[in-house]
Image (cartoon, rainbow, N blue to C red):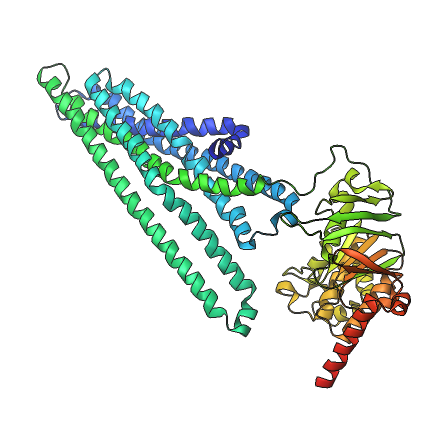
Length: 582
């Protein structure tokens, strides 16, 4: 199924509204044609000074068509906009629901600016497809049939010549425009996407760009893309001007051709001379259907390209296949990773190889290793973001694959090194974890995370704005707020991914002490390459090249003088060297 037919399918549920908009569009044009033709008849006939009774019907017709055209146009715009906005809302919801299961594994190679552009600008481009591509050709065909009925009885050659020029203006010229516009419309959408991506990068990384002197480079990229966008838009405008010129040429050629056939008919008495003006004005009015066809031609390729960009994402294979009939999730008692192996697509070296461990309520595990040893991969598998190649992960002795992924994630709270804080208040950042949280629950979570005193010192209390990414908070406050959010979820499993990264030693010690005081009954797993405070953990798993090479309490690992011992020694030497420099 091609892109355009897939886009049309979205309109099927609203076919009645679309049909109504189509009918209203046709009667609007018909009213315009009727207004011009009756006006021409009235003026031409009045010039002959007939009785007022002869003009009475034409006078009433002018009034009717003049009023009805405005009413029908308003109704048509009202209905067509209703259809368009409902379709756009449906498309946005559909697009989000399609890409949400892809995150994060299926979208890790995508640029956030490009994703935003697809979700916003590309879907807005499709507004033109439903409102200005589908309807105009149908309205034009109905209008052509109407004119054949009106002009045919007066003069068949006139009617046929009109249809010929209408076909040239409504089919040949737009097809030429589509052929010429194809490359420019594709370029326009791509350049617009690149421009937005650079702008988002520049805004998000503004402080770093200023610090490292990279602001000029991103400015030049944005400026170059803006110039490229302007040139493409200018070329499209030039083509649109040529298209409008050819359409006007066809319109007046249609009038001249009609008069060419009609005048001899008047001279021979076959046709009443009054109808010369009726024919000319009717043809001019009927060409009202052509400008929308011009827009349709210009929007067709842009809509197709936008649709292709959307479907390119939504057609991707979901990294994790959900069960057809998921099992009900029991109360957590046991999580086991049994001989798990995993290799990233496109690579030959396994990221994890024969990995096994177990988590129970009240048990604390630390997963340590150098960067690239597979720690983050473990987190993604536990959160059901990826499928493993061999082995199994089970929850309460049932395979992960028997449960819905969202149900599994509902049992796990995650505190990462870069937990996202939204540009809102403290309260808003807390309640996203528990929308029904009471004031008492918020207070309890903040006290458990050692952030309550800080909140009480602020004039706005919980309504304190924290800024973009929590810039008004220190590193320790940032992590404590993220911890409070995890505690509000009250989930049986807590996974921490480098939670103390970027914290100084004193803040790190205070944070870890707070953590263990507040998670006594939870199963806790901390993923880290920092080796401070690991004596609190029941078991330490030492990961190297995707394999667990050592495991046990810290005292036992140090006594073995193996990899963990060497890692600890290296860290202590580095800290000692840093203290000498200071």
